Image (cartoon, rainbow, N blue to C red; front, side, top):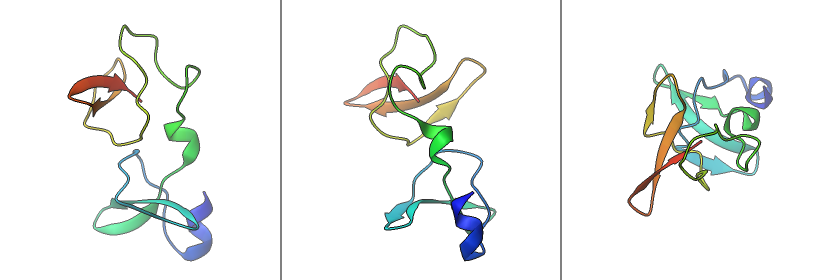
Length: 79
C-alpha cells in the first residue's frame, strides 16, 4: 500500500477523511491510514450488481454482505 512508505498502515475501508497529493487518507485505530484505491473503485466493474447506482465517491455509510453502501443526493448507492 502506498502509505507504508510514510510509516502508516493501509485502511480496511473506504472512508475518506482527507486527501492530499499522495492519496486519500482515513483513520484506523486512531491513526492515519492510506486508502487503497483498489478497494474503492468507481464504475460498473467495481460496483456490486444491485438495483442501485454506483456512488461517485468512496464514503462508506454502511456495509453488509451484499455491498458497501454510500449516500448520494439523499439516495443509497453502492461502492
